[in-house]
Amino acid sequence: MFFAISLLMLLPVMPARADTLSALRGRYVVDPSSHIAFSVAQIGGGGIQGVFPRFSGTFDLQPGDMAKSRVTFSLQPESVATGEPRVEKFLRSSAVFDVEAYPTITFRSTAIRQEGSDHAVIQGVLTARGIAHRETFEATLVKRQGQTITFHVVGDLMRSPYGMDVGTPIYSNVVRFDMMLNGRRR
Image 1 (cartoon, rainbow, N blue to C red):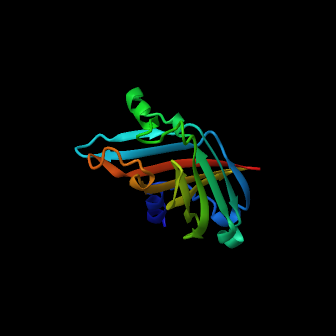
Image 2: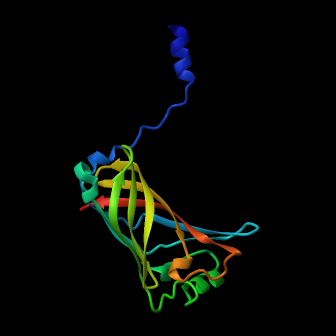
Image 3: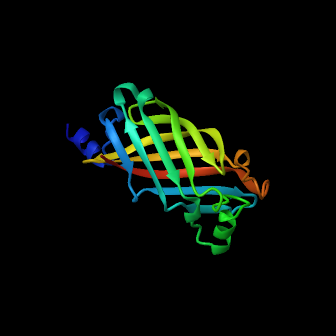
């Protein structure tokens, strides 16, 4: 018995798992404390990494019938930040985001499929530069605290369907999104 208790004391303490998606009924508004990051790889290393600090969105969650849940999200590409003013100016230009003509990028879910107690696949339509395409993101519930939830959302999108393929093949055609979305219940 002493050996078993001693062995248990040596095991690392694992953090508690987040609540399941089934406990999250309601409408949540994406909080400004969320973090929207992206990256584009470059041959030979480096690449472009950045964030979008201005965005908005909602999660309408129906856990008994996840197919009835909805996600809407928009971001302002003019807010792109990379830490490199020259790169930011280029990304805002007509060669990439064309922020003067298209000030918003939007995503609206068309299907949400739960794939585990805390994981879902979200399919929807992303519209950028006036061009709409179907895209898929994966969302994992990270935590729930009071009226706030946090999802880790990832997805890989091709730039070329949106007319943003300048610099390929030196820069990858794939944009990796890695987001921590905090939602506050309304």
